[in-house]
Image (cartoon, rainbow, N blue to C red):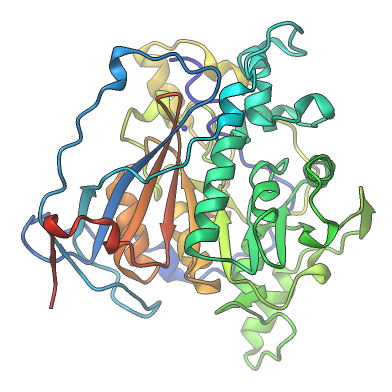
Length: 442
């Protein structure tokens, strides 16, 4: 998702601390370390097969090189476990990683004609010069008044990738109501809102981000009924507001302990406003159902790739999402931009030890737990992960969330450079494996 390490390819932002700690009631089993993954045996069925594919997208910044010619080894024969989903199922199982042929895409002539690189205007901040110069890649309507905060420059998904993910989602999930769990300034929410049949519920803890997202959505002509913006910590929504796609917050609670936990976790009321024609408010604006979730959570800092290497990011140990807090809004840490500088090995070790250090470990969930919470709302989950994430950690997270069979790991290349990764869960992707290379289980 070189120096800086990833920037526009989403979401090395720091976690925001917007609320005080008022919920320590998370079940103990969520803090139990996942079981060790059994060894990989290529000719045995696996609880989870991570099917890795790539999508190549291009714009006017593309310069052909000899490195473009790549040869993909054919997928090995793979025993695919039949797809299933069961939250109560076992949390152990073997994982297979299998690269499959690239996903076909339709060339987009518009992007080949749009001049995405523009150095004619100076960057407003030296630290974002690289991203400022390619601002039209982030939003092709940037010059019409797109708004981003400092964090947004390093977090927003390039528009062409967001557009592809939305179209792929429509093709395979056809969502009615989609929840964008960490919407930021709206890059993905805008594209999803252009394809959903009913509504996108865009959630963030920062109202200023929501206002910017609403403003940007208006520039793209998104109908106001297609988007609603919720100011809330999404973990509260996952844990207390929805189960199996249905809104449950207004249902009676028989257990006094559960009722007490809910009252302690309940976020403070927030004002409802109409901004640029879109509603922005609290949990009272939530719809009665959710059928699909998109998650692009904060990954802990922009230097995740420098610190953990090409395949070293682990969802359990590196990703930490904080629970609701009641506190003053904090700004980006002083060392936020320092992480873009070259670092010695000793400095890397220090920063690795300090990665996500501002997060209260007793008041957060990791990337594995986040997927399990989302899957309890709906099995149809799209999960953006750092491009250097260990694929085995994604497979284990899927198993612990109740998935069996396979998930799709889609790498998005923009001008032959890997930018982002989206993991698609809740569907059977075995038809994408060539029949001649597949050994289906009976």
